[in-house]
Image 1 (cartoon, rainbow, N blue to C red):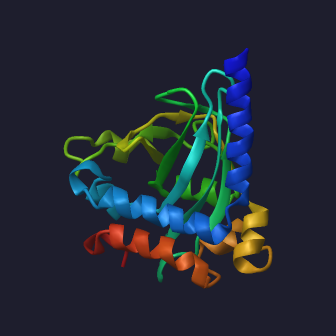
Image 2: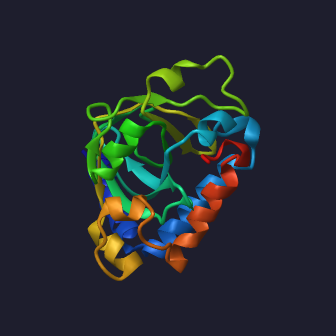
Length: 226
């Protein structure tokens, strides 16, 4: 019972701390996650995957429930590829679902790479469920995705996690992604629809620049859409 109460108290403290974080700070954290993962290419996301990615989403320090809360909760930002480069970051929440590597109660960084048009359309709808609306698979790790052709064939979303310094593909199912309206208002000083942000119809606010710069840096130039 004491363990359950302690875990519950930790969850409440963590969620309060997460909600106290400003959107600018969360964007900085998401940029750091992206930069740190890609600073070791042999253990990062393969070039081919980032090169053909439609959208990239990062949830820094997501809380993953263990024996008390079977799901997870986190806040992150997403950007999609447009004719003029990467769109402004769109804030979202992710909640529920089952995550591979259930190691008690801990914060993990979650990276989602949306690989095709259908996955992108699901994301643009501003609310979709991983594994139901979009097929999800644990993404391959390394400099190149050699031999791992199935990611190109079937998965609409490839997912990765980093916990305690370990970066790996992770299975995620049933989690619901929704637009974070409060964070959107904070970032853009008004409510802007998810689709408007991710299709590049609004400029990137200054506070959003670090994340877009990190994604731009991680994306191989030679794979850009023309």
